[in-house]
Image (tube, rainbow, N blue to C red):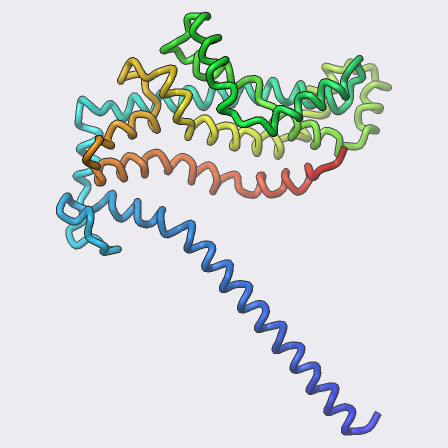
Length: 291
């Protein structure tokens, strides 16, 4: 190889490295823009929550006179039982998540490993409901809950959601990714199906269960329309999203209180995601789309 050829190769390599660096820079710039698109509304909510009344509509990102008045007003105002709303949301979301984890893990394992007549047909029909908008089931569910006398009760809010399909599909995909040799070894040792499920399979399912639990909890925590229909009659029994909506009048907005309440609503979500983020990423990458 001549000296001229070596120089040309070096120049071509430098061009490729430069293009690669430029591509990375552009890629990260796009990611930063997308991040700002989602983070800026959250930052504006936090800033407005600490603004006094006279600064609510001013376009400043740093309050001139920051105050905690918005928080103290919503917690001290007897007409706004924010603590009750928070506890109601926490109770409903926790109970709903617990039952969903039990039902969906059992159903997912049955569809993944057990054999029974019509299994594939039933699973196909169940998946078909995923393409149906949830609003279609609003009136039938409401009529059912009303006939059961559950209007204004916690069970009226959480029981209709037990028929969710996503969790069953999610857990089935994970169970199918596990090697069958684990269960076969347990059966050889004399373990029953129940013993195998609880002693062998569930301990390996911590990641997917945590992920499903977070998704379910956040869905219930942020739910608005269904709790509004079921609990709308008693102000003390409202959930936090429904209660915060009462701060919005027909012609006026109490921006400070509304943003302070929204911040209270958002904090548990951010904590859950920050603590369990690695489990979410790991379980989704393990679950895949097998089967």
